[in-house]
Amino acid sequence: MNVFSKKLSVFLVFLCVGFSLFAQTAETTRILFIFDGSNSMNGQWQEQTKIKVAKKLMYETMDELSKLENIEVALRLYGHQTKLYPGQQDCNDTKLEVPFGRDNYDKVKMKINSLQPKGTTPIARSLEFAAQDFPSCENCRNVIILITDGIEACDEDPCAVAKMLREKGIEVRPYVIGIAMDMESLKDFKCIGKSYDASTEESFRDVMKVVMSEALNNTTVQVNLLNTKKLPRETDVALSFYDQKTGELKYTFMHTLDRKNRPDTMWIDPLSTYRMVVHTTPKKEVRDIKLKPGEHNTIELSAPQGGLEFRILGAGNSYTDIKCVLRDRETGETINAQRMNSADTYIVGKYDVEILSLPRIVMTDVKVEQSKTNTIQIQQPGLANVNLPFFGIVSIFTTEKGERVWVCNLEKEKLNYQLGLQPGEYTVVYRPARKKSSAYTVTKEFTVTPGATVEVNL
Image (cartoon, rainbow, N blue to C red):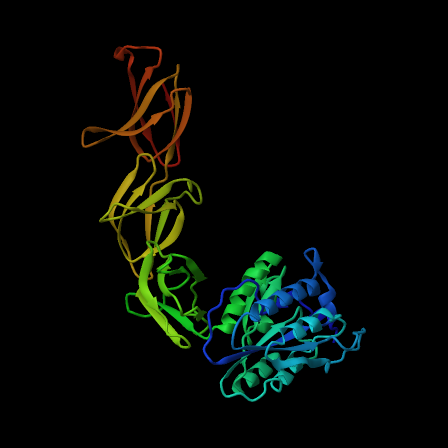
């Protein structure tokens, strides 16, 4: 097998810089770092090599971990002992270099510092041997953090090994961070963990914060967004968690359902009382959220959603500059200004709608129903070319029930205008700016038809 053909531009990493962590219970969290020392880590990424970036972040992670209590770390390296040659690879090239122990962070940093990448990528075998790296312990959480830039190169199955480790009580939480690659290429790691994309070192750091927080935090949360049948089926909205006392924004997640259609699990510091904002339209909010440390917590709220679609008959994607304003029926508060010829999602209920066409179209009690899309169609506008002999004061009117109804005013310093108007009967009222007598007022009626242009010459 060609080893290099199996390499991916990825960083499978679980380290973090500058994260904010809470005090742990008496339980010890043991983190085994499995670090890639294969030849491909010498490759360039951004303005540095991948190994240089990984080393730097590893040093900083050790410094942060050293400030915490009840944490032990160990280091296993692979691909660092036997040089890789075409057609030759040492699939046993994996070794526990720093066993678990308290305050051995400097030992890990020294070993990482001396690392010179040279070999292949035996991920499955490294995971398998890692099961022996955890001494017996009655009150420990065991976490493996794998750092690599390539997929398995030795024809073995990391998925099967990961399953075996979990059965032995060793918690494997792999997070795949793809560097300048499409997420399709990361599917090989789905069986053992989550995939993230990092196109820059800055985005890489952001993902690492999430990863390390999850590795050290055993308090989990799921948010059930209930539909009208009280089932947790609503999703794809952002959730923001604020410290209710200080008002500080602590976490933002994009809600999702997992492959079994269940709300996904999030890791959150249990020491704060939270206010959660669900960014539906309009938003929903839950206050006084207190989490039970070390347990799986469930937050439920009603957030049934449906859709509204605004379309212009026969106009395709034209006229998208027309806005459709939704307002709260009780307060009149503007909820959204949706583009014409688009669809969006809203909380189930009734809304007042104003379509900012010319003339404006006002609708009351517009329904949004659970898991349905209510499509509102209006006629295709026509065009009116209004041509003036002199600069002047110009207003456009229509007539409703015998009453003049104002549509719009035109600019004073133009002679020619092109207006998109809804089909109907109109009157233009005009007086030259230089004439100071109302007797010079001119009116002219015209008709607008869908998709057609009418010339209005005064």
